[in-house]
Image 1 (spheres, rainbow, N blue to C red):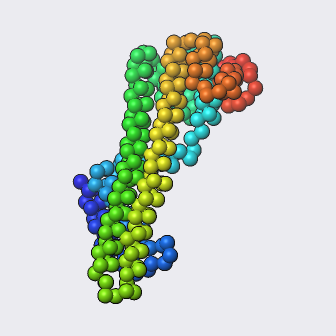
Image 2 (cartoon, rainbow, N blue to C red; image 1 turned 45 degrees about the vertical axis):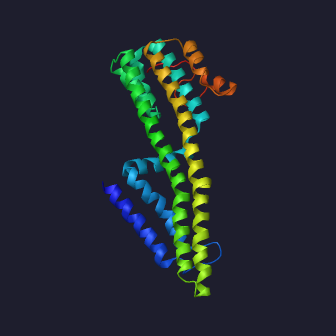
Amino acid sequence: MISVIVGLSGFASALWYVLIHGGASFSGFWEPAAAVLLGGGPIAVILMSHSFYDFFSGIRTLFSLAVMNQKREMNQISNQLSVLSYSVRTDGIGVLAKYKAQLRNPLLKDGVSLILSSFTTEEIRHNLTAKINSRQTEYAHAVSLFENLGKLSPGVGLLGTIAGLVKMLSNMTEPAKLGPAMAVALLSTLYGLVLGTVVYMPVAEKIAIYAEKRLQLDLMVLEGVLLLKEKKSQAHLRDVLNTYSTNSSDRHAAGNQKTDLTDSPPQRSRVS
């Protein structure tokens, strides 16, 4: 309910600013009142239908795009799972405790914790699948958020256009005011189209692609954890993980045997 009140107040304030100050500082393609309306209007409307949590979750997801490198993460996780598989086969399940602190992927770390806690294979599958589904739901909300922003921006721009036209018609006897009022009308439409088609909709598509890549990575982790639980051989694990690799170089990297969870030379691993 708070987000609805904040959103309604924000939109009313942005529209009021356009009605009162529209055209006052017009300069070329820059119109501050139109910028205020399009910068805050769509977001304010979104807050009427989305919670603060959904909104900030979408922003957080957007920033996470900058740090994701699917190829690198797949190689790293494949190497880690290869090491863990070899160690489990030679030294037993308990050796996973030695490597747990080195794991950076949260899902893999959770999976190893479940194995060490003696959860069954089905319990591990259910637990990790729930985490994957929760993450995908979060991504779906982020996509919906930016798609709605993309759809709303041209509409909010149209409101600015109507406000500008009304200001223009109300000043027909003052030619000096016609240009600034028309500028509000046209630039509101321009800003709305640019934000909707060039910013928000592409961002929504980018997040959707990111979600697909993250799902592929998470499913690879899930398969790897289940194979660890079943103490499958390193060769069998490599074959399964190779199905998730994007190219032959990824598959080659996933097959290298290492003593720790970094890129050190292949060597037999032992617990001291």
